[in-house]
Length: 289
Image 1 (tube, rainbow, N blue to C red):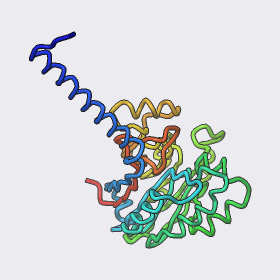
Image 2: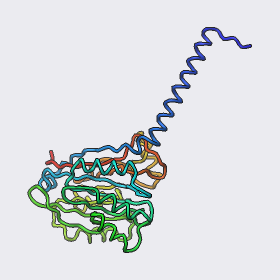
Image 3: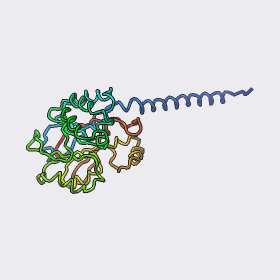
Image 4: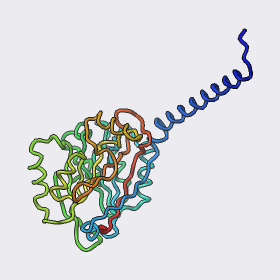
């Protein structure tokens, strides 16, 4: 028989308690990553300080969402997303790609976007999953019924509340490896007046330096899902696993412009999120300085 003295008993109890705490913490973190955080939509409010955009847009707000990957049905998270977007009452809603994850999800696009109520318009671009699952000409009818206007491959003037207009452009997937990319961007921007305020939707955040160099004041992107894990360093590791660059999430200052990478709504590859919740980004615009 093994006999423990008082010191041994205390040590055993300490180890037992430590084991329980570790198991409890591990269980909570796993529950958070698998259940809580993937459904916990945050609203990140971002102020863009740019004189041209501020003059053109005035007090207007733009809400960005990305990477919905709709499939099967609109669940709790999608319905909560609709509710929160409508409560924010943005002037414009933009969607930066990957709306569907199923070839039968076209009806979900209509169901989802027809319930959104921006004060003015909703615009979007296509991602790689959209190209994969929505083939042929029927997808154009889907967008038309949904009230979402596709802007990929074009650039058009928009009326703001401020003193003038701003331009909204977009480019779909494929992005960075697209043959003749520079020529395609030049074609999209050929009608842009010199110095005109420009917001550009790009599925691929790696295009931002090129777009800003060609006149974009603000590039809005998604695709990365924020790197999935928000522990410093780990998100970059997961992001690089997808073959991407350092533009993982958040606001970047590039030259004279800005890039914002939205964390998206759905998960990617792994059905988890940790310190990287789904995101609605709400932009407002103020003068520089």
